[in-house]
Every structure is written in C-alpha cells, then in structure tokens.
Image (cartoon, rainbow, N blue to C red; front, side, top):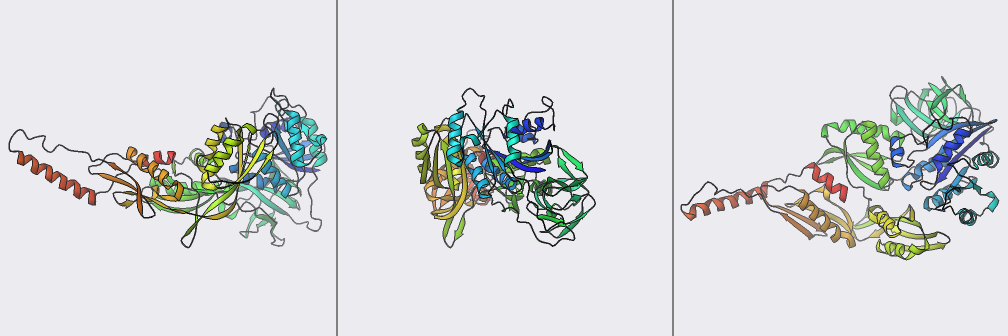
Length: 567
C-alpha cells in the first residue's frame, strides 16, 4: 500500500526538520546518528540554511510504503514545488506558530488546490516560547475553510505530535490511482542528474506497470530507447531494488550519455507501448536574465559542458551562447529570480570547478513596433498591521498598483508591480522598513506598455554594451548617474582623457571625466629659452589629442566585476 506526499511551507517553517522525524519514526535513520535536515544534502543548502532542491525518500510504516518529497520554500525555487506536486497525491501544509501564514504558504497552498490535492494543515513549533498556536489555527481555518480539529499541532524539533501526523497521512492522503486498462510500463520524469559512470539517472513517478532492470524503455519526447541498468528507491541514498511497482516514486539508471535525451516532464514507456505522453509539467518561464562568462576565455567549452549538466538537474535553467567584446564567448542564461541566479553561479564554481563572471540579472523587455512592454507581476506581501502604511508607500514608490488587502493577525497586501522593481532593491527595502517582519511572493501575470529606452554608456564615444541596458524613463537619470560615477572611480587613468557618457533617448543625461596621466616632458630641461618648453608642451597636447581619437580605453575585468556586484 503506497502513499505519495509532499511537505510544503514558507522558508524556515520546519519542512526538512519534520522530514528528519518521519525518517526516524520509520527506521530509515536512527535518532542522533545523522545530520540535521538530512534531506538537504547539497552543501549550498546546508550553508545557506534553505532547501534549494526537491528531495525524495521512501519510508516503510507498518504495511505502508510512504514516499515523501521535501520541497524548497523560497519563491525562486517554486518550480521545484510544482514538479513535486505533479507526482504526489496529497500534501502537508506546514505553518510556523511563531510567524503564522506567510507569502509562500499562500502560494504553495493555491498550487495544491489547483491540482485538487488533499491538504493536511499543520501548525509547527508549538513548543516555542513565542508560539501563537490558537491564532495560527484560526488563520488556517479561515484560509483553507477547514474545521479546527483538522489542524494538527506538532513540534518537528522535539517530535511532539509527529507520529499522530504520520497516521493522518495514511488516513487522509489517497493511494495512487492506477489505470486499470494499461499494464505496460509508464512513468513521468520529475528530476534527473548525470553520473559519469552510469549516464543519466532519472527520478520517476511510475503510473502503470512494473519497472525492472534489463527491460527496454522509450522516451517519448526524444524518441530514444534504452535498456534500464538499474531501478531503485531513495533511502535517501539511491538503493537498488528488484522492481518498482505502479504508483511508486523511485529512480531508473538509463545509461544514456547524451544529457539532452532525457528531459524533466517527459514520459518513459515500455518500448512496446503506444508512444503517448502522460500529461507532464508546465515548462518554467525564466523571469530574469544574466550573462555568464568564464574568467579565462579559453575555459568556455568547460563552462558550456558544466551548464549542460546543471540544466539536467535544474530544469528551470535556459541558456543560449553569446559573445562579448570584453569577455569573449559566454552564455545568456534565464533564471527564476536573483537567488536562483546566485545559487547557480555558486554551483558552477563549487560542483563543476568553474570560475565565472555573472552580470547583474535583469528582466527582459518585449518590443512591439517602437513601444517597449515590461513584465508585470502579481505581488503578495504579508506583514504585521503596524507596518502597512510604510509597505504601501514603498509599493507606490515602486510603481505598484494596489489591488487588495486582507486583514487578520497578518495583513496580506496585493499589488501589481513591474518585475524590474521587485528584483532590484525592493525586498531589501521591505525588510528594512518592517524590521524583517514581512514576506513576499510574486507571479508573472502580463506584459504592459511602458516608456522605456536603452540607456547607452559610452567611453570616448564608443558604446560599451556590457554597461548598457533598457531602463524606464523615470529611473533613467538615477541609473545613469550611478553608472557613470562608479565607472569614474573604477576605470584606471589612461595616457589620455576618458569621457564617460550616458545617453538616453538621443541625449546625454549624465557624464564624467577621467583626467589623463600627465608626464612632465620638461623635467630634463634646466633654464634656457621658455619657448623650448612651450614647444614640448604643445607637442604633448597634440599627441594626447591623437591618442584620444584613436586610442582604446583599457578596462580591466575587475572593473566589470565590481560594477556588476553593485548595479
């Protein structure tokens, strides 16, 4: 008897700690013998204290096989949650009693409701000194429309109430639905990674049939066939099994060496089965874009190979090859947000040994004739009542359009806001004005017309594409002044004058000047006719004028990197 379920929650509400208690109760690991948050196996996850990858584990509880998938809580990794929800049959919705319902609580719950998944509401951290248990239960009752007795109370840290919650999982979450008329194997891929010795290893949710090693299978999207080298489950390490029954969550070793043959969301079927795809996952849409370059141009092939392998494990990444005057060959990469971009950079460096330069992530505008369209998001801010006025002023200053507000112990404020405003300094400013008592979630909803143009940065009349970007009219002067002033500080002095100009809509709106290095051409002259010195100084001026006309400004890579870190 199988139960497939996930834990969903806002960041730091206790998902991974609850997973630890479940694994201890079911004997997967012994209490006191493992690291905390055992399913957060990525070093970056552990250091940052956040889950960045979904993580499955199979547990045995009496006659039941329980397949749990732990999920990230941050908005940038919401696609991991969507993939998880598509392969489970119910969820635990976990809420921290000291914080109440937060933005990602709402977002993840809505995704589960859209899929008609049963939800078990749970209040965690009831043992904490500042826990507001009854108030949090009231919030869940109001939000989900459930009865108070349907809300579980637990402490994932101490294990209080966790066994009773596991019993509820068995009683509330239904067993997998198996198609009665299809005995041939079929499964959906929900994650994968590359093993240099065994090829692509796909994480699958089986739908029908029994999967065994040495059987032949077909990938529907790429029409590739393969012989399974091994099948198994997660304990949480990959553990070989004789077979995977219908309705299970497990893995299959494909032995395929071309990572492009295996795609997240694709269907695996028995080779003899009809080539019909199981409804899979919505393809993720990148929200921000940045360029990634190797610090050494000759390392580009290695960077591209590393990105290929990373996209296999992170299906939300999309990229294409580009070229740059300053850096040579690089990649134009789409991310789900700023944290996603930063984690990707760190994974490239730590997991694949790549030294890279990441330009500032930016939104991409669409162009319709002569008009720019900018991406607009539905923004949800959850905060305390005393901060509502300050939050609304910040949203108004960020070109937001107010759409609604719900008042409870926490206030939920809704705005429609340009995505570029959200991904710049909005969250940092929000944390400042609310003393950290605010959370946000956003979702792209539309592209809307905006007055915008490319802000071009010129050095001695030459446009430097790496410093140029599309900027809305009301932010143009502020951005221009910042970039030109910082370049004046960062670019080393040359043998000639360097003019830094910001051009917007055909006119210069900001400019700076770097004075030339001055060589004393008269240093070796003592006394004598003044006209001799004047001749040398005039000759020097003419030489500098010529250098300014034909010379190339030398911009060290450190200049780009320092500016990119602050833009």
